[in-house]
Length: 487
Ligand code: NAI
Ligand code: CS2
Image 1: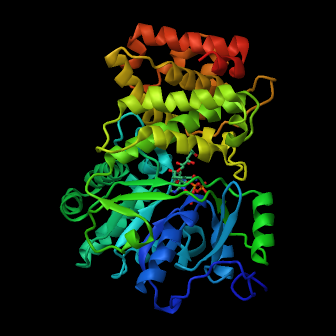
Image 2: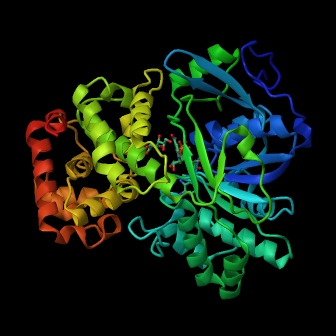
Image 3: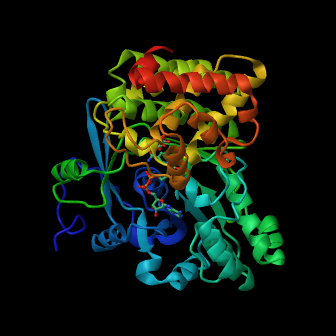
């Protein structure tokens, strides 16, 4: 079969030249999704080209994506990334992946044995916010999560990422092997701390000694990751085939911008990702918070109110001046004042660059995609800054409108009465609330009562409840476009 691995590619495809056969699976990555392909694997490819070292990646998908792993194997673990700017596109062949596994294809034991191999030094993850099985409001393990309950009953045959990590660490400890570093690359506030809390909370429920060993021996660096990588569509794959010269079902398109800030806290060595542009720092948390609030917070705002306003893509929302202005004001007036950044950080320039990135017409980033999993995203993208403004008695109207937009979106029917395909681990709860209330202002307090999303404090603040209810009321009476224009 002709694939990317045995077919001459177009001349403009940028290919590295390092010796791939020297690579070892020193990094295990959980979550061979769109983002990882265009971010960590690409940084690793460029790092390998500059250093000639042996840090290869073994890709593992724990949930779904069996086909992708099949296809990746069929093309010798090679794939392409196209970086689409407003005016030009770069095409890159990625060669840093040297093997792959999937529990459905290879069995759980094969995955655990791979994670327990001596040379493995880092287990990195892009498993989405919900993959941590944590309570979004507290960041601690959600012991009622169905995956966690199954893994507690059968820890040697795990299902969740947390269960796999704990069991693999147990095997390593029992075999006197060095531990690995657990590196979260998800959009989760203090992602390393959340990963550590979930792993330790789980381990303490399974084996106290093991938990103590993990607490002493394993590190969980925080990272700030940034690159807009929309899910691939049929059109994306057609464009990639045109640009590369052959079909690449594992190919992905993204923006040219990329950023990776990593807490330098690795227990068993690490590659020099800095030679490819990553930054190793002592404290990532301020950068994470800046990105989550300014980029992701305004992304979610645009996703809910954009979808309701009839915009399919983020770049479409940017053609409407009131959305553009509201997104910028949200960044500068609702989010930036809540941040404590290292001296010299220019948040105004950061916000302007974000608007430029959102405007990129070559990137078809669906509002529907970003709207997914709001229960996991809203607390960290808007909750922290909202509490800041409530304490300071400062203006938070953009945050209230963003949350009201989410509340209207999870009604699962749009402004033209078409169904919305709401994807969220808590969708059953939203459906039950809407079944009882309908699209009425009383839904606001019902949704606000969901403790896992809003804690217990927000619903007690009457002035906030009033502001939120007014924003919701405006959306349901005037529509999302008018509501955004009112800001
Ligand atoms: P995707 O849908 O392409 O891939 C999701 C990956 O997560 C798959 O590999 C899947 O196997 C895995 N997964 C899903 N649920 C899981 C669970 N419960 N446990 C373990 N693994 C699970 O999504 P994409 O675009 O790769 O994004 C993944 C995450 O990466 C995001 O949720 C976000 O945290 C982070 N990210 C994404 C960016 C983007 O622009 N796409 C940019 C920055 C961060
Ligand atoms: C987006 C992010 O899907 C979402 O929720 O807000 O994935 C966003 O594209 C990235 O964080 C950009 O780095």
